[in-house]
Length: 342
Image (cartoon, rainbow, N blue to C red; front, side, top):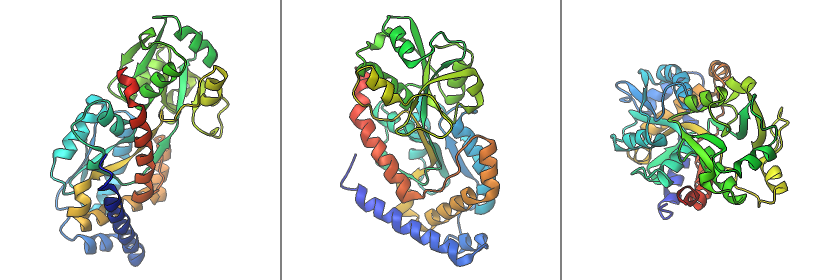
């Protein structure tokens, strides 16, 4: 990470975000006037949201719920394009190589997928190549098995993992759940080759495998798995605090009982729109327009209702706080990403 450039770029983002907010306040409900005043010549054609995963996953669903209302705010169609591969790395690389003019956006989990595509997957981009516009959805992870699984507790699962070849796990290679699993095994002194890892290209097939009892366990995002919750048994919650409505033990509590040190929590997903960093500095008025439009959509009652029905988050955190959140997670991931290559 190029720390020397990071503070300057973050200050630019904060300043521009403040201008966008003032633009919204200044026009009240007349949003179209605000965007016209900020960047009258943009967009002048369709805007593309690239999702670097297969259709059906949570990032894809989020992009499709945003496309129509964001297009209405911007005055041009917003289309969704799926470019799966490399655990998100191929799509992120594609966006980074397009002209940074605001016409090509990226929607994915900034952490862990983008971070791990860089740290683990070898994607030819850097963390500093992108700006995170909003942590729209912060989804904690769970350690889960199929409801028909013989493993009733986290301790049962760990005992089975100590027997070579007995247990399988569904993963997206290099994602937070995969990395959290390997860190867990390392802390419990379980050899990586003990577990048969089955790799999937996106969240939808990953969840389908667990719901169909095709793999023994997964560490996956909790809200993303809500649609299959009736087919799962949650053995542990990978979070620092007990989420409301959950009764499974916290991950670090059960890990501690098994003699492991406290583990960093990186298994969940922080999802939202990202843009190439050059867009922020090269087209500041367009950036202001996009941030203002995105904010207006996410904060609208209509969108919040749509997101809730789709099982998605709809929080407005803003660029500065969102970037700080994922920067901290990236630093934690960078300290532990070598676990994958052991």
